Image (cartoon, rainbow, N blue to C red):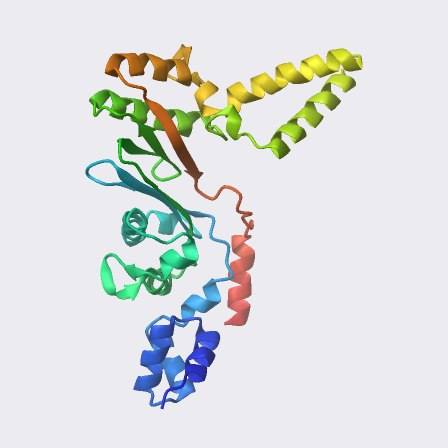
Length: 306
C-alpha cells in the first residue's frame, strides 16, 4: 500500500510533483529507489536540483478577453534568454496569462495548484515541472494581476518582446472606440514613462516622508537657510508627483498635455467622463538579484565532477 509518508519522502528526494510521485510508487510497487529511477528516467527528478538557480529572465505576458472587460498580466521567469525565446516556454506563459484572467486565485501559490487550462489532467505547477525537466532550467510563475470592469475597457501593451508589460483599466459609462484609444495611449504611457502611482493620493506617507528627508538634506547641503530649504522641499515634492504619478505625467505623444488634460479632452469628445481606474506595469526580472555566473568556471567545475 502506498502511504502519504512514502509520497512525501519521494517528493523530498526528487522534487517531483505529488501526482508523479504517486504514479511512480504505484509502478514500482512501493520501492522508493525504483520510484526515484522511474522519475529520473522521465526527467522529472531533475527539476529539484534546478530549483535553487536564479530565474531572472523570462517573459511578461498579458491576456485580454474578446469583449475587453477582463484581462490579466503575468511574469514567468526562467534562467536564460535562450529558454525565454523557446516556443514551448512562450506558449506556457501565454496559457498562464489566459488562465490568470479567469481565475479566482488570489496568490501565485493558489494559481499554480489549479488545473492547467491547456491540459486538465495536470496542474500549472506540474506543467512547469515537466518543462523544467525538458528544457533543463529552473522556471517560476513570479506574479500576476487580474482586472475586470463592467463599464469600460481593459487593455494591455507588451514592449520589447515580453520585457515590459502593462495592463490598464479605463472606466466610461458610454461604449466608444475613443475609450479604447485612450486605454491604448495610457498603456503605452505607463510602459514608456514608468509611473510608480496612478495619482498623488496613492503615494503612501512612508514614500513621501523619505522623499522629503532626501530633498531637505539636499537643500541644506546647498547651504540654504532652513525656511528656504522647506520651500524647496515642497517644490521638489510637486516635481516628484509630476514625474511619478501617471495622471500628472506629461503625455509622451504631446508634451503640451498631462494625462489628466488628455483624459478631459477625450471625455468631452465622448460626452461622458473617462477615468483610468488602475494600471499595473511589470518589467521582467525587476528586483531579482541575478548571480553573475562565470561560464568557464562552471564548465571547469562540471568537468571535475564528471
